[in-house]
Amino acid sequence: MRIPFAHRPEAAGTAPGAGTGTGPDAGTGPGTDTGPDTAPGPGTDTRLGPGTGTGTAPAAPPGAGAPPGGRLHGLGRSGLAFLLGALPALAFPEPGLWWWAYLALVPWLLLIRTAPDQRRAGLDGWCGGIGFMVAVHHWLLPSLHVFLLVIAALLGLLWLPWGRLVRAMLGGTSSPRRAAAALLVVPSGWLLVELVRSWQGLGGPWGLLGASQWQVPAGLRLASVGGVWLVTLLVVAVNTAVALFLAVPPLRRTAVAGLLCCALLVGLAWWAGAPSRGAGTVRIAVVQPGLIPPPGQRFDRSEELTRTLAGQRLDLVVWGESSVGTDLSARPDLTARLTTLARAVDAPILVNVDARRSDRPGIFKSAILIDRDGPTGERYDKMRLVPFGEYIPARPVLGWATSVGKAAGEDRHRGTAPVVMTLPAAAGPGPAGLRIGPLICFETAFPDMSRRLARDGADVLVAQSSTSTFQHSWAPAQHASLGALRAAETGRPVVHATLTGISAAYGPDGRRIGPELGMASSTSAVYALPLGGGPTLYERTGDWAVYGAFAVIVLACLGGRPWRRAPVLRRPGRAPGAPRTRTARGSAGRPGR
Image (cartoon, rainbow, N blue to C red):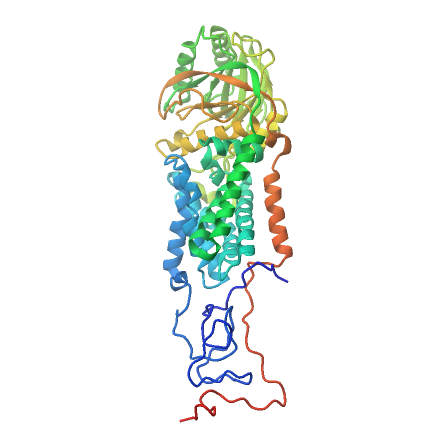
């Protein structure tokens, strides 16, 4: 069983229309016997492909009639696939070419489309996936060194079936029906690849294609309806339509219709995802001490900057990740200094402790709330740790990574549950009982975590981060941009506070509010953030775009696996007792020589 609109790949070395026969696309040469009893002669290719008749022809020279991309093979083609797979990275910060995301996959799609067989298509997908992972995570090279290539090679395997899927849907002689299906199947396949690699054990959802649209109002509105997943589907669908438009001129109407459907989807999302206006604002200050490695000096600088905020009617002051390097239970002097500081600014302070706890074994990263009376008792321990940065997966097997890079020498411990904190009364304009949902570091990359905090009643999402290890790379800008998506998805304002930049704040619609604090700046800033007016469609309905993509792929599978290798079709043998057939060389019209 197969999908009626799926492409059945030709046998290796056989191209559509190769050879001469009696099919509608095959001509007859002089003296060629076109009767039903024609049998193969010496040097005759008897394999049949689309548009190939049942007659005979001299064997074509190698590469004759093959698709243009079929002539490129071996290491050269693999290297090209690697480079083409890396192109989408330019759509993310720092380059930030958001419009490039809608074209970046087109060269890769066209290359896979011309693969001579499904095996080569899968290899093109794998090599391109490696290029994508290396390009998006290249800033990890100083920390992971050659191990980054190992990880990229393993995760790149996720694109192998996608490559086969692309060729099955876009390759060969297509039809309007198959082309229309490709506009759904190809984006759905890509989304499932992103979903699998978003598992925290595989590195988490860093570099999702939809995240490149963090500064585009239409993309943010789509995120409020279906999360970053819906944005990814739209981006890949546009790429697929453009590839069809360029590669198959007879199907340009189908490609244009697909682009119009994408525009219609954006229009519907703009209407359905319109945010409701909330009542009131909150004033939240961010303290960014700058690139000061010693924890003690970092604490002193954060304290100094916080004192300058006195009298500014604040609801909360936020310090960055690892702003306190000692367990506060073991250092009452630091606790006293923070308590005095909270009284001075007349607002609670959310600090982040990265230290070995005195009440239990192990190192934790924890968000702790301090008010004028000391620690409030509300504490959030980071749940999703950075692989290799904060723990090493399967350390007995992969522990050697510490010898080739800056991998974690000791695993940090995880928290067990998200926490929503209620702020004590402060001098700011925020409502009484304001609730915040803390996130630490790359937890802002996970849509499900911010959605869970919003559903648990958080009015503001607060992210504490530190990208000091990756200063002057693309990482700080990419990390800060994630706050825009989480704000749009949940309809909650987001504050992204870091030690060394980039710090920023976003309104409930995902648009940036106020200035961002650049890398290595040692300063503070106050943001007046409007509160959201209610749950977004994504908060209410969840990951429906993911379930829809999964359903599309299941339906494709039920219709037949389009990525399987089609069997080589050969001419059936002569029936028993049938008269011996004559070759063209020995026919009456052309006597043998």
